[in-house]
Length: 332
Image (cartoon, rainbow, N blue to C red; front, side, top):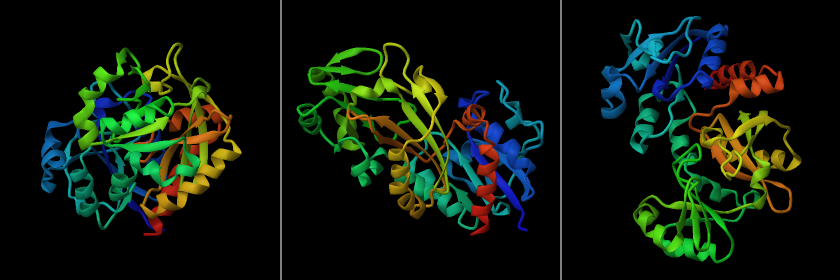
């Protein structure tokens, strides 16, 4: 039986006690194939040169034990800090939120070429952009890549839209546009006045336009998938007087079941994600105007919600995740 020395890359500065990393790593520590887990935070000054300047010999880690848990001061990431050699690890677990540059992802892929990288950094580079949804028009609402103000104006002539920055997450930067008005989730703006303020981002970074669905109040469902298998799902409901379903934006999460449409969505996307080296991911769905669930997001970077879904379902999905993770590593 192969044993794994695991390196976890994260950033503790954005963590809370609900962050999935703590529950996941406590289960991983107990697995018979886990020899050791070291964790490195981008939030430490000692790791600045590694994460920002890509200097290999500046990585500092902490070796985890059963006492590892969330703390407000992040002491678990700095106590007994030691230098690490990247070649010592044969499994690397990426739990880094954005901002994360394309250059860093490319560097990680090269740096850890002799280890199993979950998820593939190169695959994250491709799939974490919302433009990846353009591969699956049959299971999405009407979508279009917008690279100019003209593109946006053409879309809002057809129907209300949600305009999404390609590389944001957690509901950040979303704009609901209904011809003359833009709703950013907090304030209402005049469309013709507001659009020029994002002209440069439209042209340089682009946005994805997605038809706004009137049933958004019925919730955004997060489906957790590992190696193509659905683990659990949760329905996230928007706060009162809001159209944003993200828990980070004030929504709430309740247990749910997957529908036949959602099973079909996973069937449609899983082979292309596997080709990209994506082992675990979160899929978000909405109810369209005909009452069917449709694909709205694919999350492959730092997928959360595991302990919450486990508590809601009563199913040990974190154990299933870890078992599958080591089985995945064994194949490489």
